[in-house]
Image (cartoon, rainbow over the protein chains, first blue to last red):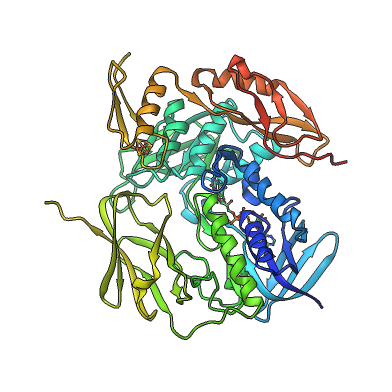
Length: 419
Length: 118
Ligand SMILES: Cc1cc2nc3c(=O)[nH]c(=O)nc-3n(C[C@H](O)[C@H](O)[C@H](O)COP(=O)(O)OP(=O)(O)OC[C@H]3O[C@@H](n4cnc5c(N)ncnc54)[C@H](O)[C@@H]3O)c2cc1C
Ligand code: SF4
């Protein structure tokens, strides 16, 4: 069996940045395995601008951002295979992939970095009543078809879910000549960034229906009509509030989920983000298995993906070099009141000055403290005038506050008392 | 100028701005919001991103963007101009695809390397 020190699953921005991180730390025997005919991942279809402000201090489009990392990997001559899909990973770190060129290939790795991105929740996941015609697709599918293949997905479109990809597709389809009749969001607030609300909906007078959902789809072969309804506090459609729209296409932008099946299959524990439960070195509970990017937790900014992934690559390299041992003493981190998930799940003190915590809040909040409680004592409170679920928060906490590095740390949201 | 209420889109904080008749901006947390408020009321601009047809490449489309912001009122006119053209691989990132897009003084550039694929 072929042996390779570091196998990276996925050649998107996470896989590429992880490879660069590992290489620069001294591990050069790497293979990136990518399913598509090109590197760069999902960014290739995100042709809008707004990427790279942190990483490159420039506002780039998705393909340009991807290109920078493809070139960083190519400058280092980091090997990769394309049109190659990983089918299986074993606990002993044997990676099996298949490609038209090579057939089925097995590789023995010393460490594995999981960087397979995320997938979109689809129509089946939310069970909309009514017919099952053609013309219902996810925002990412619409983005791929339109932006890479020039296939116009519909003429009259309705969008369910106010996630950023849905908003961006509302603008894109409008500019390409489609009529976008509206966006329905089941929550009482938008899930997209304010700037996308303005630039993608308001600019084109596309209405947003908050606390509304699609309650029925009509159509024999193709979508002909959809019905939306207002929802009550328990998210159930309210009778008598129905509105119908004559559309040929329904686009779903209802959430992204880490594509972590390969590691789930071998029983690596997962965290609340639905990716692997990792420590502050991006190592999972199985030694030598690392994860980063959208397969670990869904990111809204690729700038954060590459920063995280370079770190994951660096630690994977140290593991291969025998310089990263799992410690007995570590802190278990949990998401307390008002917090959806926190990465990392474990912190093992390693002499770093600060420890980064990444999390999302459950709902938009104003004037709150993000409160860190270690073994019952509040060790840090960070005031936030505004905090929203659609933006991942990153907070660097001084490691000296983490005591001896043992016990339970809870991150929670506490409302500031009015005075 | 008419009074306007706007949401600042410069950063994710999304301040609610009020711009009065004399272009005084209030509600902004930082100076960037004041500049945005003035610009948005007097001459709103946006960067445009789209695709153009390409031959002999891996994919039938090459992504493009304007190399700066163009007046918001010219977005659809720009899309028409973008629709008219067609490229031939190879194309390099940053290649100018249209000079002076709709008279805005801004160029349309390619945003992906498109090597020749036979
Ligand atoms: C539809 C969509 C639109 C988005 N739009 C934006 C946006 O506008 N702005 C923004 O900042 N972020 C956006 N994001 C988030 C974006 O995904 C991240 O910013 C970042 O690009 C994710 O990088 P990644 O490498 O983790 O994932 P990806 O870029 O998805 O890379 C994962 C790679 O793994 C490969 N892969 C998966 N499974 C296998 C396997 N079994 N074998 C081999 N290869 C495999 C995939 O082909 C893919 O290339 C979007 C995400 C999605 C899903
Ligand atoms: S005014 Fe300043 S802080 Fe407020 S949204 Fe604009 S840029 Fe952000």
